[in-house]
Picture (cartoon, helix red, strand yellow):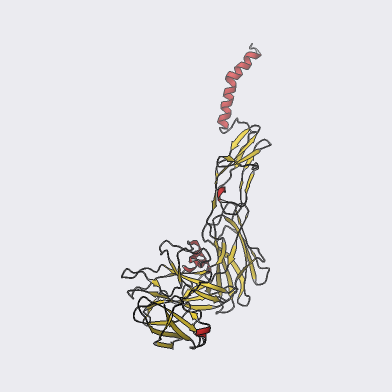
Length: 497
C-alpha cells in the first residue's frame, strides 16, 4: 500500500500537470495572474483644444482598492494630479504633449497608453453663420454653418425672425445620427440643440449643421426676415466630447447674387462690368461691407486681369466673417434670373463640400471694394469693374463678402481741379469725361448740392490712373460711390494728383 506521502508526491508530479493541461484546453484564455492587480479598461484618448480653453483626460481601471493614480506629461509627473480624471484649465501652448497615467495598488502597477493633446495656437473663431438664402416656391431656406475646430460634439442656438415675413420654421439636420431638439415655445424664434453620439465630433472646417425652412409671406420678402441669433429659448452654446463648454459666437451673413454668370464688356468705358445684388437679411445694419474678388485670371496677352474699381487690397487673408464659399458655389439660386425650383434636401447636400476662403488657385493679394450702411432687408446693386488689356478675355471672378472696419481715406493736399469735358445723366447713371496725363492720378468727387463740393464733398475710391487720353467715368455705384444718383441731381469735380 502506498503511503500518503508517496501519493501526494505522485499527484504533484503526474496528476496536477495533466489537470492543468486539461483546464487550459477547455479554457485557453485562463490566466493565473493576480486578479487583485490593477487593470485599465478605458484608456485616455487624444485631444485637440484651443488657447484659454479647458480639457480633461479620463481613465477607467479595476482592481483591489485603493487604486492610486499618477498622471505624467511627457516624462514628468504632474504634481497633485492623482485622480482618475486629469483636468486642464486655461490652456497654453505648454500643455501640448504626450499624457499617460499609472494606476497602482498593493498588488502591482499598470501604465496606460499614450494620449496626445494638441493645443492649437492659431484658431479661426468658432462661429455659427447663415449661408446663402434660397427661395423655393413659397418657402425660404436658411443654411446654418459652423466654423468648427474639429472637437465640437454639441451645439445649441436660437434664431429670431420677423413673423410678418417668415413663419412655420422647420429645421432639417445635416447630421442624421445626431439627436436634434427643436423649441418653438417663443413667438418669432426657434431654438435648436444638436448632439452627436458620444465620441463623435464635428469635422474641422465649415460643416453645415442643417437648414431652417420658413414659409414666405411675400414673393418679395426673401431677405426681409430680420434674422438674428439669440439665446432664448435655447442658449448659444457649444461643448466638446468631454462635455466642457467652448466659446461660440454667431452672426447673420450678408448675401449676394449675380445678375449674369460673368462680366460683360462695356463699350463706353472699355471695362468689363459685373453686377452683384448685395442684401442684408439680418436685423442689424451692416456698416462696412467689403466685396472681395479673386481668381481673376490672365488675358491672352499674359497680363493679369485687374479689379479696376477696388478701394484697396489685402495681403493677409481675412479672419472675420466671409460669406462661405460652400453657400456660394451651390448652383441653386446662384443667379437673380434663375427661375428653377429646387428641393431644400438637395441644397443641403452642398454642405458636404469644403468651404471657406480657399487660396490654392488664387493670387496672394486680394482686391476689395467697400460699401456702407446696408440696412436690414435692403438689397443694393453693386457694379464691379475689371480692366483687361486684350479687351476680350472675360474674367471669371469668385466673390466673398467680408464685414470689416471702414477703410481710412487720406486725400493728398496738393491736388488741382481738372476741367470736365462731359457730364451728363444717361440711363440713371452719370457719365463724366475728362482729359488725363500719364503718371497722374485723378480723384472724382461729388455732392448732392453745388455748395456741398466745398462743405460736404465725397471722394470716389480708388483714384483713376491717367493714360494721356480722355477718360470716361461712369457713376454706377456702389462701390464707386456710397449711393447711386437718385434723380439726376448730382454735382461732380475731378482733381488730379
